[in-house]
Amino acid sequence: MKQWYEELFENYARKYDSESFTDGTVGECNFIEQETGFDKSVKILDIGCGTGRHSIELASRGYTVCGVDLSESMLKRAAQKAARANVKVDFRRYDARNLPFKNEFDLAIMLCEGAFPLMENDEMNYHILENATAALKNEGKFIFTTLNGLFPIFNSLQKFYDSPGKKGGAAYRDSRFDLMTFRDYNLTCFEDDDGQARQLKCSERYYIPPEITWMLKSLGYGRIDIFGAHLGAFSRQHKLTPEDFEMLVIAEKKK
Picture 1 (cartoon, rainbow, N blue to C red):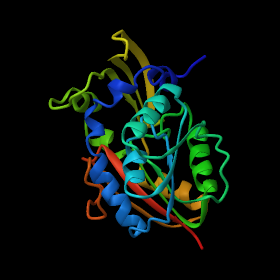
Picture 2: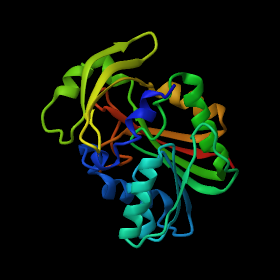
Picture 3: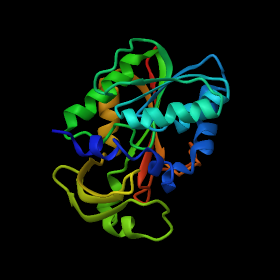
């Protein structure tokens, strides 16, 4: 039986690129470049790369990038976009819970809920962090965004989903946030790339900063910094608050 995230992304690549959260690619890559020290020799792994927006942008700036995703249709569109841009990216189909890489990359990125925290239980989400960590060289860096568990404690998720100003076709109904599991259950309504109306029962895990810190420390990271994730404007200056829907995590493996 397919999980909701597999069904969602099996025929949603073109529509995905029209969603409002895809608008921040350039600014987000500017931040990633700053974190690499503008060192073009840095080898980057993009986990949950989707249609390749960050992979392609970083490769166009001279970085060696490998993008992995579970969805064949998303990877197909990513390859088409890279070809049109005359950019070389090594796109591969892998499950983020079972990656083959060992000590190969200087930087791993996992942005816009790329795989984590979509999984159906905490163990699977943790396996994604394990695999990302294993792919990094010693002293490698891991940059990712995830859902901020402080947000639904202080704010209504349904009100956030219904707020105006969001382009794109997806809508989220009947949101129910479970304080015992920190999971949001909702009905995601969207139109796929063939114009067919679809509805999926979805569940995503929200994390609070101490949970993220504990998991990363258990995996051997030394410095762990967590900030508010602002669309297209990632920065170490944005202190995380309950008003941030996502958090930006920057972790460095111990020497």
